[in-house]
Amino acid sequence: MPETVSTINLSDYALCLNPADNVAVLKRPVKKGATISTDDGDIAIREIIGPGHKFALRAIRRGERILKYGQTIGFATKDIAPGDHVHTHNVELGSFGRDYAFCEDARPVEFYPEHERGHFMGYSRPGGKAGTRNYIAVISSVNCSASVSKYVADRFHTEEFRKQFPNIDGVIAFKHASGCANDPGEPTRLLQRVLAGIARHPNVGGYLLIGLGCEVNQVQGIVRNEHLDQLREGELPPVTMDIQTLGGIRKTVDAGVAAIEKMLPKVNDVQRTKQPLSKLVLAMNCGGSDGNSGITANPALGFASDELVRHGATTVLGETPEIYGAEHLLTRRAVSREVGEKIVDLIHWWEDHARQNKVSIDNNPSVGNKAGGLTTIYEKSLGAVAKGGQSPLAAVYRYAEEINIPGLGFMDTPGFDPVSMTGLVAGGCNVGVFTTGRGSVYGCKPAPCIKVATNTPLYNWMEDDMDINAGGILEGKRSVEDVGREIFDQIIAVANGEQTKSEIAGIGDEEFAPWILGSML
Image 1: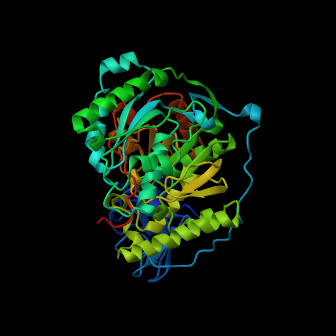
Image 2 (image 1 turned 180 degrees about the vertical axis):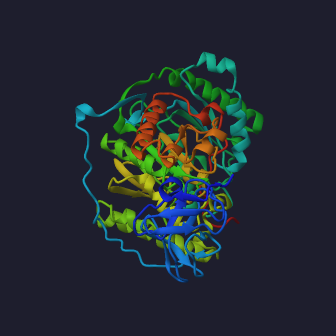
Image 3 (image 1 turned 60 degrees about the vertical axis):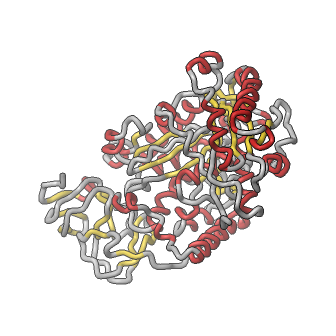
């Protein structure tokens, strides 16, 4: 219920995140007519405003910038009085120049000495990588083989299988809605990159590729174009088949099951061993965000990201449309002008992509995001970038490109959570952290995904799905560093084998969603 007291202190009920800000964010709902006491005088709240939403700290004229985090999040569409609710009804996106100041804020990483760097218990993989899980993958080249791939995997979803092969986390069917009737150029190459990334993922101990036989995205084309036949020491050779050659569904399912059965003993023989934290590759995503995301969970994850980087690990941001308006914060931290310019080039591509499809990038904040207090994509982006902490930006990757440079990276992905995480995981991320203010139930096989709630009511309401509660930051009970340390510790525990809430719930088999580019004919 809205707060019933008549006079309240700003620090008790709201946050002003930067001295330059002309709005504050409410930590709890406040009723119309309440008075908020500030150092500059009392402000009368002019309507009921919910938690995570903003109110004006001072008069804002039409056309004036709305400032949060000391950054522009939009422009007033009308005069706004102190105490007014500041949201979509009186704010528009607008445009403004950003000072990219390439590399200006890049600072060297303060690495921990080698003898102080941490470890986890993981699976040693070919090429010097390490897994946090041990799956077998059944990968469809095309939607036409999706059901067959599922039928093969389903044969191993039994209690008997789990007892006989306790070191295998499961057999997963990676199905998708593409693979034919599309451009054989970049759209097909991108899909092949995703599928090969799953085949060689450090959390996958063996794989089977299944096609139909007549599709554009040929199974042998995946093997040849992505060099899956160039084996690294200890790597299992690719196993491929197609339905038309084998004579139909039943025969292919039987052949697929037999192929998996041959892999089982070797995959099951792999044991967890001590691995350096430098072999962790963390995917960072946010979805179902609210006005608290950039205040609690995201900066706490940023702390954990910085800690991992100091141990020599790799952390990767995604969701290019969700850094829009905040990309200058990354270009300023780029290790080189070349890396920074890659970010700007991506922003220009997405602007052109939006124009061609006659949409606005500001459509990106969803209905739930706006209900949670996020007004524009600029505001959402400023909070989203906080997941990257303060480390220098070391690399920028294409969608599903192999992640091979330690430190903080960025991958070009759409903002749609399953598509974004699919790209990050296909690039090699072996664990993920997903922050949410509205309650995403996302899970992501083969990489375990830790979910962090931005506020305590959400955590309590969806405790079966949320791994960590960052709401204590908002309540003044915990610091960003304290929650960030908890996230860091949980990443290590999950890398060691502890199950996430999404794994316990069995989520992750249906969330594989490659980015589908181009026209379909």
